[in-house]
Amino acid sequence: MEFSKLATSIAPSPTLALNEKAKALQREGAAVINLGIGEPGNFAPMGAILGGIAGIQDGNVKYGATGGTPALKEAIIKYTAKHYQREISANNILISNGAKQSLFNILFALVSEGDEVLLFAPYWVSYPEMIRITRGTTRVVEPGEGFQPSMDDVKKQVSPRTRVIILNNPNNPSGIIYREEFVAELVSFCEEHSICLIMDDIYHQLVFRNTPLPTGYTYTPRSVEESWLIISNGVSKTYGMTGFRIGWVVANSELISMMGKIQSQMTSCPHIVSQAAAVGALTGSQHVTTNLRQTIQNTRDLVLRDLETIPGVRTTVPEGAFYILPDFRAYDQDSQRLAAFLLEKVYVVTVPGAAFGMEGHLRISIAGPQYEVMEGLGRIRWALNSKGSDSIYLGDQKVVRSW
Image (tube, rainbow, N blue to C red; front, side, top):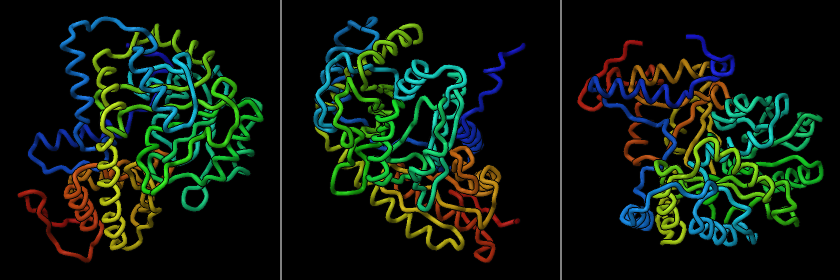
């Protein structure tokens, strides 16, 4: 069978490929620890569960409005007022089947063949492939110290073809928070030059500080209708509701209308029951988010201390999200080879940094149970330390070093 040039140009997700290999090892009885998956280990909020149950019991699980239910839009309006200090209307919101579809909708609406989309390395693994699918061209701003970019480097990458810039803050895969002065300059630059700035805020409540993370709207006096800012968010990360697949976009009504037209031809509408669950999450008790944030921060602190015991590994302290991106180049310059080695030898799943534009690094998720994360790091330390013990137990299997 012959496939399209576009289809054959798309790279498979490295996280999914590693997860499949890990599942195959598990079926063989291996005690696999997955430090690659990007989802929290908590249960969904009770408000979400009850909202979803009520949505099913109602029995009216039919097609809904393309852009989302009035109830969820109302909840997002209140959420935006609370967290973004912006008054919006239902016409400024499009709800989708996950934040990933939200981002696709934005790119399909804005990017024509040959248009450029600017990313900041390290970037989320799916961004370049999304841009490729929407027939755009990716340009990358390389990071400085601590993964922090500069506006001078941004300006060097911007060209007359630059249509969109994407900023994910806190950042996946590094967990860094971009400097406030940089975000302020970037917002001002995009507003001045009429460049669409997508703020991927999917982790915006998962920050390890006492004050809320300033939003893009903090740095512009323009209203949502007048601004070039586009906010993408969802319930997957903040509430641990990855399987519900509900995301949304806040933007000017003209863009929302165009995205709605695109979505109507793709998926018709977001899942009705999941939307009811999302209402429950947004309007119910927020303790789940507070507890999740504190749990991840506690794990982060342990992980940082543990990584310090591995000679040659350099780490940038994550300030949000639930990832860490250590530099393992002292052991292997090829992150794909190193990730495969760790999976084969000690059954630990990590994600190669090359997929995020940071070769020689590995992304480690710290969202899972603390004991699993620490067990996984212990295995990594053992695998890399040729001067340590000759053997280790992986579950009830004894492994003897042969390398």
